[in-house]
Image (cartoon, rainbow, N blue to C red; front, side, top):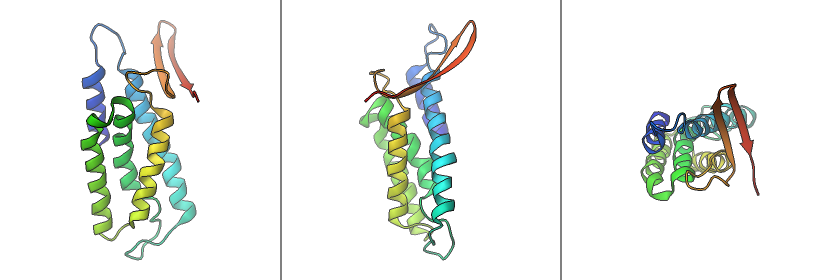
Length: 152
C-alpha cells in the first residue's frame, strides 16, 4: 500500500514548474511509516508478546495492519476522507484477512489502526493547511534540511 500512497502523492503534488514540491508529502509518508512500523509497532510486539489465536507469539499489535493503515491515515490527513476511503477499506480488509487466518484478534487490528492514526496525525500536514503538525524536508543551494513543526 506504500507504493500506491506514494504514487497518489506524486499524482496530487508533482508540479514540473516547482522543484521538489512533492518532497514533503513523500517524506511525511515514509518517515511516518518508518516510525510507526519500524519503531513503535515492532517494540510493542516484542515487549508485550501476546499469544496469537493460532498459538504463536507477538500478536499485539498487528504489523500487517499497521503497514496497511498508516498509508490510509496519511492520505486521510493529507487529502481528506474522500480520497482516503478506498485506502481505509483496503486496510480494514487486510485486518479482516489476518483475523480470518487466525493470526490476530480484532483488538490487535484496532490497536494498529489507532497507533498509526496518532502517528500520522503528528507526522502529516494537510496539503491545504500547512499550519497543521508536520514533518518537512527542503532542498536549497546549500543542501537538504529537515524540519518538524508541532503546533497545538
